[in-house]
Image (tube, rainbow, N blue to C red; front, side):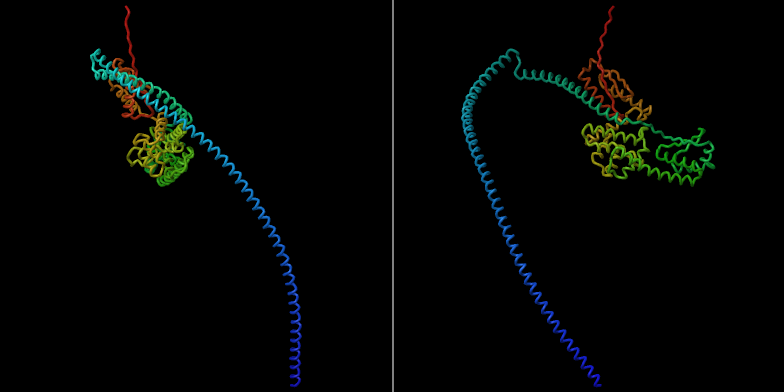
Length: 521
């Protein structure tokens, strides 16, 4: 136990001694660090003071330089202002001199005006005296004339006025004729130039549409397969397409007949695919016809987009594109409607460019002018008004809407573009070979032309020539003079415009001829 107590005491004493030694060493080390820190702080303070003095001197120099610059700038501004002030003083001096000279000039003119006023008053007084003398002389002369002629003043005035009016009417009629002739020549030349240039730049082929299509077959045995057992295949085909299929003795050919060009095309393509596939029965026929119909509907959209690209027309409603594509399967008097509409668009654009109008709007109106012919056949009304409703529905420009509705005079034209559309439509439709006309309608039109011209007084004979493009009118020279002949030609032309429908234009020529003959024996 004693040894343990002794060991503990020794350990405790050692720990105390170690602690004391550590404490003393640490205290000494801390004192040394403090001394070093104080020395370093004094050094930093000294350096900071030196640096602050240097910065102070530098800022003072910069401030002095800035003050010097500002002083120089102020002196420069002052000198400029003094120079400007001197210049203004010189200008003011010149203006004062000019004002003084002008005042002197005005004073002189006032004196001259005063003198002229006095002279004018004197002249007015003399003129009044002369006028009174002239009035007395005129009254005396009138009294002498009344005694000599035996006519009163009112009668003489009336007689003179009648002569003047008759002379004025004759001169006016002659002047009107000259102006009209000159205007016709100039207008005809300019119109011919524009129209001929437009036609030359859009010289396109014309194909006459028919109501039948012919499908060639490999051999006549295929006709039996197309007809089918007891005619079931041909009945199914006609029911699915709505087209008549004519199978006769024509070798290696089948005729597809129908007025709807779209259905006729569906029938043609479907029949060719059925013959190529070899499977011809009612179920297969319905399947092929349905598939071909969908393909052609997509083709319609591509055709419409192609027409728009060809004319450079953009931003049009998708449904309008579909209507444009349908034009490919429509015809007007045997003329393909899409080809006709594209040509009208070209003509409108060319003429609009010559006249300084909006070319894009003109092309748009020309392409869409017959869009009413593509609507459902159940809708009634003129195609121009139906087209106007379609274009209005799909937010077309108001000028385009009006041009579509007015190209057959169903509504009033509101812009020159509407006139261009009507003219281009007539040009495209009236070109030889563009449209087909029945013999009966042709003969009726010639008869109506001659009847209208013959209905006027003084007309002896009429002749419709050049396929109804011109009517020549023979008149009685004793009853109708040259001036009246011009008026008669205009009246006949107006009657024709009002009462007849015709493509293009009709020229009215009035012929006044007087023949005198004698026989020498």
